[in-house]
Length: 440
Image 1 (cartoon, rainbow, N blue to C red):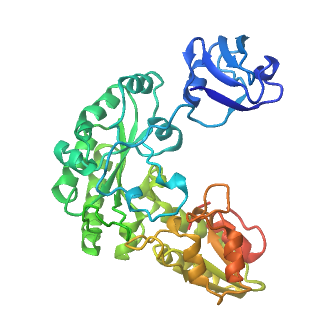
Image 2 (image 1 turned 60 degrees about the vertical axis):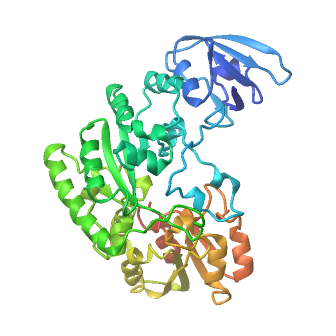
Image 3 (image 1 turned 180 degrees about the horizontal axis):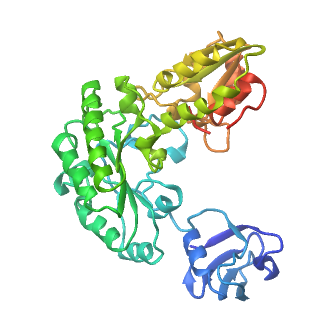
């Protein structure tokens, strides 16, 4: 495979060399270009030779002289030019296996590609890496990577991932340690499988790989109502969540003394489930597990705190609805109460049940268009309903079930406003810019 070029920067080296959109970059200095990483790595030298195929099949060999590190100015169709490396596991907790039918096709793809781990922060298991993958990973020093560990016990990990290669996790982490590659890890906590003593051994074992392993994020297993014929699993109970919070607090205290970092962090769901206060920003250090839903609530609360001094005493009378998921409601209740103090503002906090997935799913990112339509009915006709952008596919108005914002407006009669942060929501409600981003 090779990189199909979709754009060439005006005035760039590539444009001057005669490269155009529609051309295909085959190789640089004889090295096949399989992804954006290869392109960036092999195009750094001052003198390079490009092998380019034109749309009519004509092959060009282009000699380039440039400054070291200077970009050629090429834009590609995808970040990975060959096939995405897909998951070879059958994890007992796999969320994709629990998806209902008729959702976006891309949602059923099981990505386990180390390149996307480096470029986008996707978690991978390391179970599908070939010798050539390890060589490239270490040669290009792809750091940091994000690795789903779940446990360090070889037999248990192989059982949980349903893959005998999963037992090699300690050897693989050692290999990354030796290569000087940083790793952020995660544990999907499945009560009765990898909690208790197993979890303690995992945390302490991962700490032995510090500073290569930089963090451990613990998230509760997500269970939908579509688990027929799958391994029976139990959700994290409120009692277990209480115990974990206390235990991880103790671990953090120890690690801050030893490693000068908290090292291990719990997902927001544990605090929401127990009703305990969301930890302060210091708990999350530099929010290195934020994409894992660890620290989002704290960021949102702190962001709103920064806005409060700019809130107006009154606004033009308006009737608004802030619609969100069940798990986000406890975080937003205090914010909504404060906003209701503004004269002229009517604001309702609407919980949208996640009926589409069923089970224990209650996060905003998995709310579907049909869930919203059901929650709104016709009761909110003519009202301004605010939705968090995390419900939508990136850079689109498409929900997980392929419904659009326009279809929701048509069926509910509501006026939908999608916002990217709590700041956006507050500024929309107030009708003017205020001051400072975080999904709700």
